[in-house]
Image 1 (cartoon, rainbow, N blue to C red):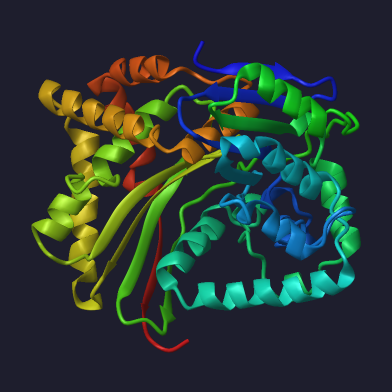
Image 2 (cartoon, rainbow, N blue to C red):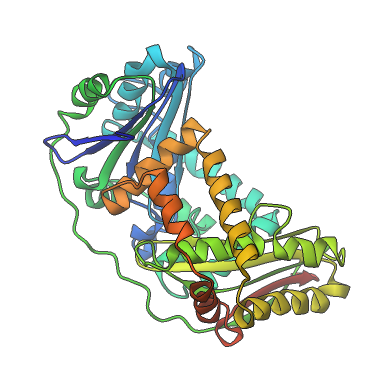
Length: 410
């Protein structure tokens, strides 16, 4: 068996992959993100992620930050639109220490007012830093444009105004609604035996009271293409274009993953990189990406270029999209695209921490994890006709939104 799974009596699910490494990786993935915030709580999920490190019933900030670092381990956390994850990496002999710390900060944080005041300022500095990076900012602004007037489109960091107004009442409101045991998965990768993982999970998570969350997420259904162009104090033009895409449970998801990888994935031989950067030399950075949420998705293309050649760069991108819509991939092209994606997935499995997070998120969203052989089989089963159909659904020029940051004064 590739994975070992079980559930605690309180509803927390556990998934473990045993390896021969000396190090272990584990994390608690919670089905709570920025889309679960109320309108006046923008930035709250991320704020909570920061504040859980600021004191518990047993530990002060220094003891939390030193607990794993003092033995060469690491603890960290992140927030997305739909998830919050607290995770750790460590020498295997410190497994109990890591799980104890994760359970402590996730279930016993006290959120001291003094520490919360300081953390608001830290996050506002983070917002200012982010605003100084237009190549990052445009991704969030584009998502807000596509998912207009919906919680899934809001910036995870929030705004300076909203963060200053966040209160302890807001913190406990979101925790009470979303930090529920039926919305949690504890994931682990490392040399520990399944029996040892079960014992440790029962010890540190078993006494958490059982709880269930209401399914109160409102799906996004009101997309319409928008073309937006704004001036920014930038030296080059930043351009985004994209469309709504398949949700995480859609059968065509794998096909779009393959199509995206072929078009603008991380490899240097992606179509966009070869035809825009390498052939014409007019974009230092160009990429495409696909994000699948539980009930919707987003496909997007980003490039940064000199404003004088922006029109040509955009024309070249549209030409590549048209090629994918009009021309079916040949047998050799399709085979090479599949082998490339399969190889990338295999290489990603070399990261213990990355594998752990992937297992946890998959188990949380689907209640199961496909083996690598099953994933490879789905990729191999994709036909050229299916990719052509997907390209015409997602890459239709009439459905694309655009956002441009061009040089100027704000």
